[in-house]
Image (cartoon, rainbow, N blue to C red):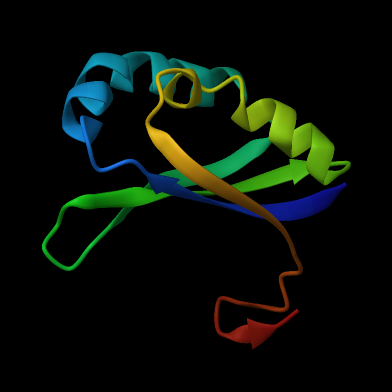
Length: 98
């Protein structure tokens, strides 16, 4: 299994309304996919408006991650403007080299 960083950029128009309506379903989705989605959270601009999100996902390949992304209720609701799926190698954690 590989680790992937998934970077989302959100649409600015209607973002607050979409988040409000779909947040519960989004959290349920994350919980149901916790075996793959190791951590997830929003990204904010300096003025505290939402900019997007970040996930760390464990999967065999980027196609598996892409399929997972497209099952997220935020994706189908149109919140996500773009997504980048990048392989990630963890080389430093908790103050030490791995």
